[in-house]
Length: 303
Image 1 (cartoon, helix red, strand yellow):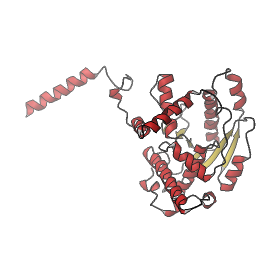
Image 2 (cartoon, rainbow, N blue to C red):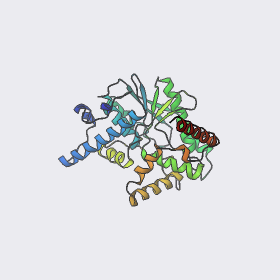
Image 3 (cartoon, rainbow, N blue to C red):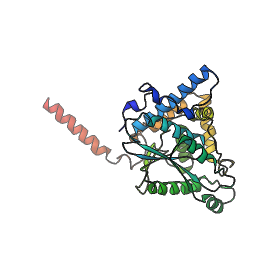
Image 4 (cartoon, rainbow, N blue to C red):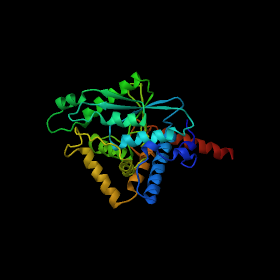
């Protein structure tokens, strides 16, 4: 397990800044200070998540799923930044799933990753055609697309010997999923920072779990990442996730600190205060009460 020094920006100067080839061109000293503060905050939050959930161990080979969006670019850069000063040895391999969407700029990610010198693979799977064929007119494609994408990536991780799969979901993604499941699924669940896949073959980690989307967006802008938009799902009107995203954004605007409080609630669950009989023994409360009372009577008699 990693030590706290893993995420402390003051522990070593060589890990507080991006690699020279990734340092953005900033116009003045104030911009540079703000960028360094932002980068250190992201690095600290990622490091804290790694520590809290024991995401990375000695010798791990971490497959970083790179979509071409702001979140996965940021995740790769922060993990590379942390890797240079980590007290454990672990390797990173970037993997992009080319879903054969029409107009997908195939050259962008290879050119970017070649420049960085990062090991990478482009996995080609025509999930686009499957999604378009199977999704009824007017329905959103996200559910089927995500299942096909996960299946492809999980299987490929085993092929390349990666024992951890890193996904770029951030704090807002987790909260959005929480409300989507409550509103439309009737379940109280979100996205865990660390997850064992159903077949037991893969461990999924979400290093950005503590990071705010706004910070990631600003970091991505300053770093000038070559963003690739998702034309398959990004243009769909009335997506439930977008509705929930707008709701959370409005809450955050009107009630600063509410999202922080809600995310804290996700990490601070009291099963006895809910109503899930599989998580808490409500039937056995009378027996527990009787045992407690018996113990108190015996203690009283002894004294």
